[in-house]
Length: 327
Image 1: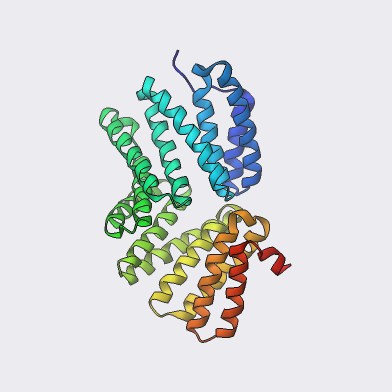
Image 2 (image 1 turned 90 degrees about the vertical axis):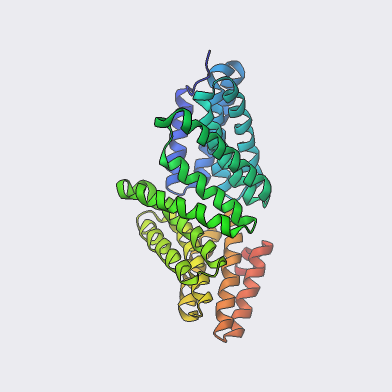
């Protein structure tokens, strides 16, 4: 009997709830929902693996995403590694049905490995996912979507960038950006967030290759998109806006436009302070990075005494003492 994605009614409802809460940026509630779904699916899979292993893998995939959003990176990797093992087992028996699921799980595994600085392993996982999808595309053309290709190109570029292979990373991210632009034309609500992320990463690649004006243009487009998204759904998109502003500030600084760089990074720091106050595990590292960038911008404008105080706050955020320091 072929394994399928059928699950209990409650588990299905919990999965939908997780997706809705995640779209609203309410990751702690989303995690609670998906953890209950994992428990249900695991119990069902123990009794009837042929029927419920696939459902368990999907729940674990979602659990990993939620854990990652909350900064719980080791746990996120453990969850997605279990999902990969299940999908690999299923794909061996039913490749047409489960190779796409395996590829998707490998993409998430790659992201988790990259977040833990395990860069060579992250690149190997995304390369395996790419090979699977390209082979699947040859055999099943209608089932292979542009979105799959865009995500693979994006993730591969990120892995190459982490390894300092910028000349290889740039064409991959440019290809991903081109695909997402085409997708945004027909479905802006669905794909604008992806395009903004890709543009920010494209900006980083261009900057590393000393193409600074192009890097700034890409970062500014990402900020415009994220600002629009954050106005409509702040809980979901304020973190992305803060990251885009941080990126924009660095690109302005590289061009010597320090007053503009300062304005952008002050905006980013304000957002990250708010987010870190509510979710320190997830956002203190980002706050620390943005504070160091703020200090650099202040120093470049000869405001050294203010920069020193900001660096002390950044040190506290990096060490985890930020809450006690700001209380």
